[in-house]
Amino acid sequence: MLNREALRRASVSFKMLFIETLQTGKSPAATAFASDFCMEDTSEEFQVYFNWLMGIPLLRHWVGDRKLNELSAAEFSVKLKPWESSLRVLEDDIRFNRQGGLRTVIQKMTVELLNKKWRTVAGLVQDGFTGATYGDCFDGLHLYSATHATGSNLGTAALSRTSLDAAILAMRSQTDPTTTDDLLIDPTHLWYHPTLEARVQDILNKQYVIDLTGTSVESNRQYQILKPLPIRGFTAAAANYWGLLAADPGDPLKPIIWRHVPSMDEFVAMDSSQDESRFMRRELRYGIEMWANAAPAFPQYIWGSNGTT
Image (cartoon, rainbow, N blue to C red; front, side, top):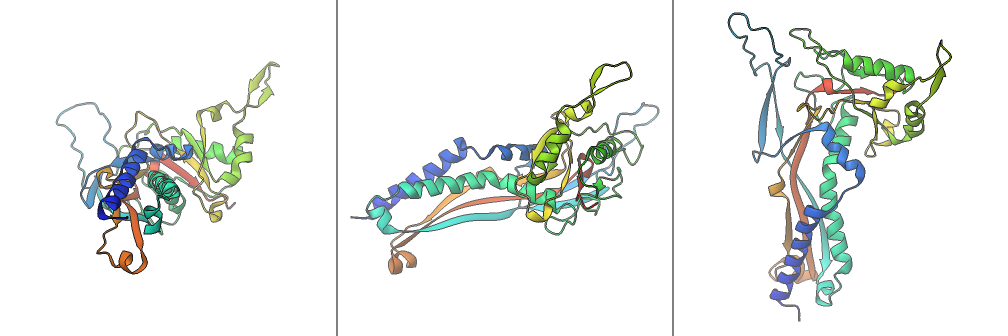
């Protein structure tokens, strides 16, 4: 007999599976790269305001009074958004202990919660040319723009050795807008639509030429600094998109802000005998919830081209 206690045990079992998968589950390998793009905020406030300097305060020779930098130069906010994944199950599956497939589905739903960070980052990296979905940076410009105060991070050239050289130079040419000091930014990743994989490998693979002394030397040694990063979440419309990312582990600044409150990740159930869906259709409902959002942050740490020329 399917009584209240049996339903409670089933729901508790599913919730424990959800918690266990969150703690030990592994998302696809590409998802791990999302952290390279993101500064993370786990505060539980619904809306958080960020105050950025238009320039980064660098050390200066201390002569006379200190030069004070203020954080009111540019302000924007990032609101949390609710996300859910739900399914309905006939109580017959619980009554007759047909839960094997259901447990697998709940595990997969939980893994998709883990994947949400990467899917959001992929969407924002693609959206950076228009700002249509995720908005603009703190300076009011798209993530990729030719007029950022620190320097242009926008290109239109298709991926080639020539355009890659120009992009690397552009990232290394970023300067503080208040002092014109070099920001010392170096690219670490080459990101691209997966359809460009063969071209990327052709560029990054070691090649050799004969120098003036007759010695064989690497002709593309400068590219060895770049880690290839295919972004599988891109749509077909972004088939020619590619760019560079600066993700130095020692630098706290990143091009994207990721807000996520892990304490609000939750498994919920509608399995009461008082529920209309169960009374009318012998239907139980289970769901997964999370609160998260992302926004563009420091554009000088990313460079992008739509590959149209």
